[in-house]
Length: 546
Image 1 (cartoon, rainbow, N blue to C red):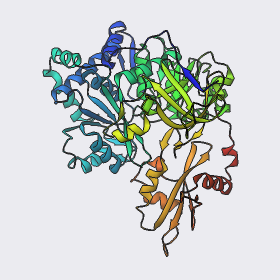
Image 2 (image 1 turned 180 degrees about the vertical axis):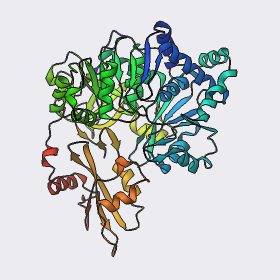
Image 3 (image 1 turned 120 degrees about the vertical axis):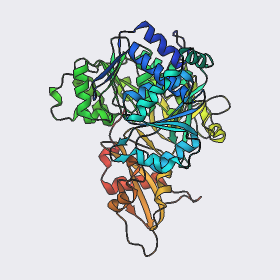
Image 4 (image 1 turned 45 degrees about the vertical axis):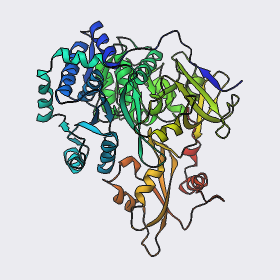
């Protein structure tokens, strides 16, 4: 039996734009609660949220934003994020998601590479002064026509600016859209060390969000707690679009992940579903006074982003009452989900696999060297084909051609085994990728930055197992002759404020040379093995995961 599966489905794909689908939900359920922001206490029904989205869409039009223009959003989770997401979809502007952890150089690259014309930004994020950071790059970006900061006068003025735009002008803008138009760019690190802009259509992400929620059994009674970031597919697609397509309620527990705030939101808002990467669930289970929270309203949810320890999955099901919790696998380039467990799957499927193929999607597992489909039970590269495959990397046709072959298959770079029941287990990665707390980090990007240190001659970055985050970064460093030795504190000091915090290596090892292959390539597998031994991480390396 070959490792191929097709998600045959009697439920048709949605042939709509995101805006049209959202308006239909609002018309059907005008008085149903659509969005709750726990930090501010603000609430919107679907009619109220639709009205707000329309005002923001008209404001974008009044500022010259049209179909195909890029609008950046740089902010932690907040209601304005949701409004911008649906407003850009209404007029066909392409929303560019910007990671809130980005530093100045990363912000500059993304704004420049995507050609953002209008930026919506928070004012601060943790210790970052977004106003100052935007100010550092703005003069060098001639395409950036305007910046609006959420929560201050510029946002109010922006919203008010749409008053002169007639409803007819908005209807005309919407009439020019098709569901195959690009509507979202999400940046994912590439092997070159520079982020690549995965470009997604209405059809890509509306349907993926819809079918993720279908498999979770969503309906109008569901209230979905979203501590996962909106800038990522997990939040804006699986969360926001999954909820809106089913008339469910989006609940924002906090701007950033806060395990206690998440539990409090579930209790107060009687949430029925909770999303998170395994690290988040571990933190929630570890909150002081966990047993005192009333989580009995929960029935389902989704765990994705990195492998889940089996014991954690069991505790989530029993102690958090999420008897129908699912696991999903995918990547940004596939909108994102390609496989997902089902609500009625047995314990083995829901703890030992990442599920079966999604509706209307094809998956196969191939020999990376020959491209031939391997028999079930045999490891190989998992590939995805179907409506969910991205349009391509923004302005990078060569990189697109490397990822999507002539037959339309997206090559994920992940190693998987398909079982005889067509369920899949991810067993490793071909690409040199580290997944820390659900965030993809390419070591090459970190290496390129560390090369800027005047005392570093050479560097190789690897991932080592970690009980909390799944993996942590470790840098093997060759010092320049005569340079004083560096340690973890020195590397952190060099990196802080210059690259995202999750890209800063936790461990440092000084070496005279790296293990090399006969062709001159660094043997990172050997480096990882040596590091596990030296750091005493054998238990973490052997932890069973789903």
